[in-house]
Image (tube, rainbow, N blue to C red; front, side, top):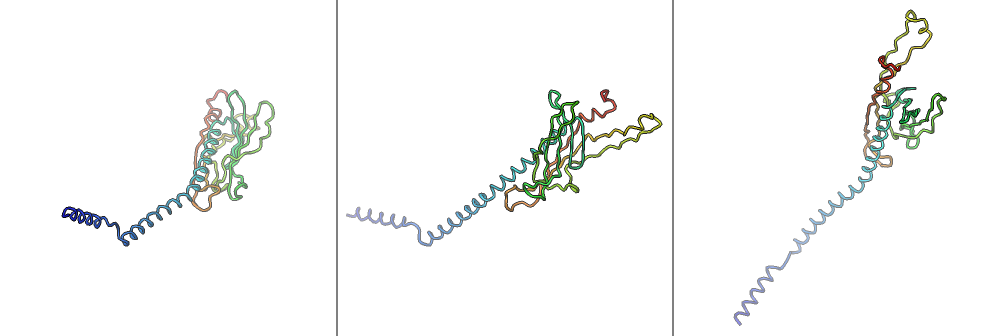
Length: 231
């Protein structure tokens, strides 16, 4: 009997020690858990809202970089320039097999597909087989859109034309009747400026991002060099 009483006493002590949390402790724990869960859900909701804008922004940057890289790479292979202004370059490039292609980049065009206030670079071309007349260019296609470049204050192409030496009639009377030969620049800087947000993003970034490149026209320099025996 004495042993049974002692066992019951020990059991009561154990039950008393494992009585659990009080109501106040439970309410405090629930409040802390609710606060932590609310903060985590707020962060998740913000991330969900920002993700599409960031993805569209990255896609817009990739499109601008891809268009600029392709344009600079093609200008770099030019064999002859037909027209060069701060926003237009018209040139001839020779493909493999001797095919001549007339290419024109025009970058001061309003991007009416998005907003008349924005600009775009568009490309057109025509395959030319000399000595036939140069054919008309095909329908232009957009290479870089949503540009912020101002055609007058912030043009796409930057270059310096070398001075043209005047012809001295005393050197050769026949040269006086011929116009002086134009020397084109062999180094062209290209810069495009786009918004730091995607086309469909509502709000978000308000600043702009600039991408730049440069084209060294090695083929044109070789043709214009006075040491080129084929000129």
